[in-house]
Length: 196
Image (cartoon, rainbow, N blue to C red; front, top):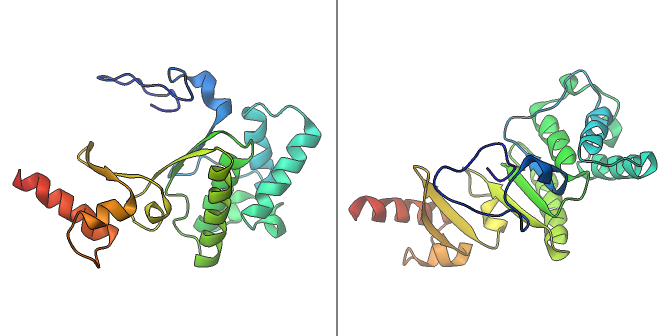
């Protein structure tokens, strides 16, 4: 719905101050859980293609942006390899580069660091933190709690409905346990909903 591909059935909302629509796609970076890459194209060809789709018309600007994000995802040495020769984790990194290449003000990322090693995951979160500091909004969905632990606000969803929303610390504190994890907090709210 946020990228304008589905229409809401029972609500209205805005994205970047406008009703959601496909024309906003140039201002949104979207990384789906399942990659939407062209397997026969190389890493840089995929990222360049998405840069063009996002409206980057200047060849020199596109080259610079593609190199920057391919280096960020640590695939510069594999830049000419077809995506079909890459591991699942590497493909995830190419998908992320495609979402980041045009420096959008809104990033929608579905499990952005799943399958990445801890060092690269930390590098991504450093990059995300820098983007947030300059005004980028990140919306992340995940079924694991590694990525959400880095977020400023979380919403726990169960059966398509929000069951809790707060900061990570606030959600952990709601359990009444000093040692509670985000997983503990999620289970606490699931049980509270069942009991109500």
